[in-house]
Image (tube, rainbow, N blue to C red; front, side, top):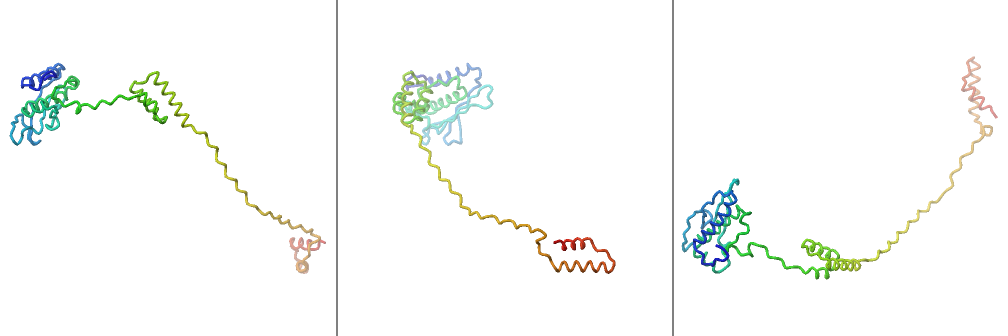
Length: 263
């Protein structure tokens, strides 16, 4: 099926489209066959044969496997009927009339695209999913001149200018407008430096009462010292006793006696 075909596609058209896909992937030299498409009504039992019944007017899901040379596992695609049913009313009617043919062909195309993305990525059929389901919406073009002129902060303006660079939307005139707006916002946001806060007063050290140091006691000359009469009498008795018994007087006693005798 191609974009020029109407929604009166026949089984021959479907088979021709699948043959075109196989011809393209065979040209890669890595085509290794495609298994028969299988269907299920309950997600548990799969079969390549599916018959419409009042209870099941369409399959629950379909799956297809494609083998590629050099790839260990086949590329498998499982698609749910409710998720891929065409939005176009005419194609929807044909799918409902011949679900096995149209739904099965869709699953087969998906598996071949999965296995050979580089060869089939741009192929699209009339009953494929709408662009709104496959592609992200195209963003609306941005008015760079307006965004530059209405930026309220320096950061916002720089963000707009960075986006313009990524979008390759920078021009000489926009750069002039950007520089002027940047200078304007920078001047508006400038504030004079605040004077430093006064330093806290230094606490006065506590007053310490100074008292005169106690004067050292004067040294009394030996001649003015008070003599100890008891000491003198004891020393004299010790010397007299030693002389009376013809014993030598100890040197310490003699020195103490002489010291006591000094004026």
